[in-house]
Length: 321
Image (cartoon, rainbow, N blue to C red; front, side, top):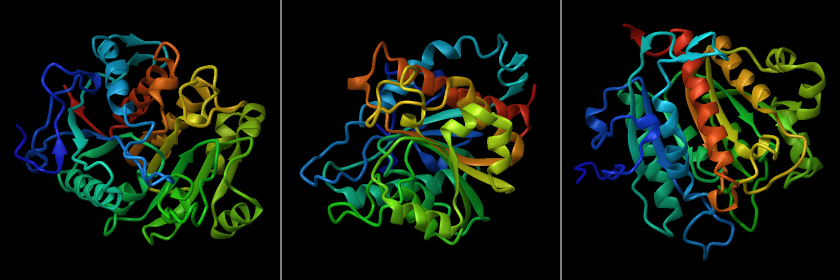
């Protein structure tokens, strides 16, 4: 049993992310990277007790396990082993302890848990959950140095409210823009249509958000896309799986057409780690019940591993063996 009421540890016998050791108490966390599941959101239908993405943290854990045995092997995408021979301490902290239906309380619990991880000096890697969950995660960075938020997504998520809900998955980036420590923003991989109307697009651009369309990335390349992202010493990445090409990520809440390819997404993530320090990351909006052969969970687990690997290659985490 965990003595830490903030988290529900991964049960014995269940997969952890990358087969990492389990953490049962955030106050004793000793790691470079802390995995934290946030298996809920803030639904627009307040009668709903769970999110369609509630099973995603465990699906990502299961999908990552087979990769753990090969981390020390040569990887052709990196031209070396993924961690570049470095010892990287990854710990799985389980899921935020939540109460079904207590949406505001669950958000507060998420902020508290992420703050605890940051205070222990680890980089939070958040497994969502729907795209509302970055809101309480961003809140945990209050009092820290400024950061630029980079969103990989099909949509801009800039609604003031939907159905009277101001902290739902369509309002994430507007809420981020209201936090003084978020000093810049890029929204990358945008395509097709979503909840945003012309007014929300105008508001986002007026705030200073940089919009990078998926079609332009296909035509101009990843290096061009990275050049559009504001310079910063610190980046937080929020990754909605519906920003990916649906052929590799069918199991998402809002599948579309024309999204980022695997290598486009991977090279954007890795390029950001070369551009500045990664201070946090979340992967959201995977719906395992809609997936095909666990493909979405597998590709998103690998993309998450690629980001961690590039952080190691850049010397941001880990130490030489």
